[in-house]
Length: 640
Image 1 (cartoon, helix red, strand yellow):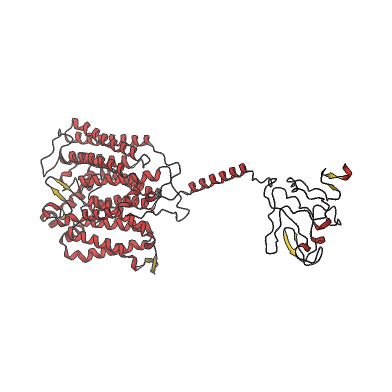
Image 2: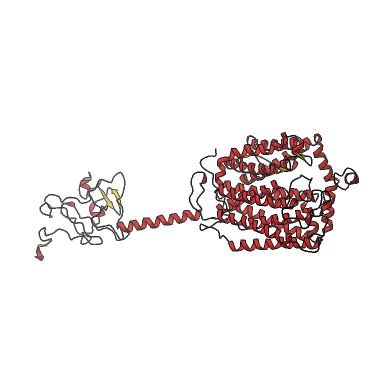
């Protein structure tokens, strides 16, 4: 089980200020609808152009297929708006538009297929591979809705980290233990077939393992960030911290050995490596990971013919023997020819020859589309992927917890790296890996997995963009700085209001309250030699001094002048408190205990004992010296 407290994302510097205000981000529902409508119009234009190029007329499917795709896309949008209203407004429109283009082009390839019977122009919308792709799209939207309804907060997934780990390992390794008759395709054992139905478990395994990687790196981030030795200016990690990357590296090589699936093994290792860099920000992990993976591939290269064939095709695809005799490089050559034929503007939708490219509906769908829309159209599609990836990384930056940051960043990297692997293989930049293009390529596992990926991004984005509120347990996040400042201001205002209600203000001490008073004690009462004798302890200017005389140092407000003698009995009434408050009594080891209202000394001019004297009101000068004081009239004898 996950730890009860989640790690939180703390800014490393002023440049990492929160991107989400306390009030949340705008929902922009109108813009989303406009983008969905524009995407539906674009899909309809593609379908209309293809029908006019192939049969020079329209059919009911020309209108019905785009309308059905638009309705399914609106259902996906409605589910997201209902279950994740603050999610990024670009995720669903971009994914829906790319999926619609893929369905239209898969159906277009079916209509000119050379290996199987071509699909008739008036076939239903669910006919052929394009029809199956449409049904997979509907299933993907249903599963997306279920995912958003069950996972109401992405931090819930932390509690199932190890369950997802074991499930991901089982899904990824299961095809390797099955017979080749039901698991092998194109030289790789990454399928499970049940009659006409087939599934590719690695499409779901990579999402499960990605979630576990995020949980693991949140817990071990501090340990993996510790610096080790520095070699050639590069700060390396400690040797004992290399365990996780060694385990993932070994698992990737085992997958490559037993399943001969270069694409999946490379993808899983790259995901972990990228998330490790996001968590620790150490470039040394990238260098170590690439060195380990390339070294492992070089070490096992002489023992696996499947890997040797792919590298040989990549190095020399135009060899006539490989093209015409063995046919191993025929697919790559035809893809390159198609891209060259499209040129800058393309041949037009429906005017190319994608039927000459083997597996043009799955592995090489980018080459088939590029032939008909040209470099400009293909660049526009790649820009849509770039925007999707950018919004995924921005979601990670906006997330309020480290787990959300790593998961969103890993999902965005997964889309980008998988597109790079596919496009690099189609153009001959890297060896072919057998991966499919996200949203575009035919295949139910690929499409459903892609929309589940969108669902996870939507869930993280909704949490990152909604108004902040306190949460607890596994859902706990760190409060934004502006929230803490707002709470501090509220507390200060409440304390000021309470103080004002209690009457404790800066206007002065409360009459009759328990306020400190300033009392001057003569030296003979402090153990000194007497009034005016050295060695006495008196107050002067708020301090206690020894060795001073009362006549020199004690300044009483009852004196009438510089030469006024001290009051009879050596006692002077306390002075009035200063305006605006009082000064606290001096502290120190020589400060004796001073009662607030001292009793009158016996035989003094105050007369007979009486009740406690009344404290003078604040800011009121004390009464004159008791020269002739009558307690009954509270006035001098000369005034009666």
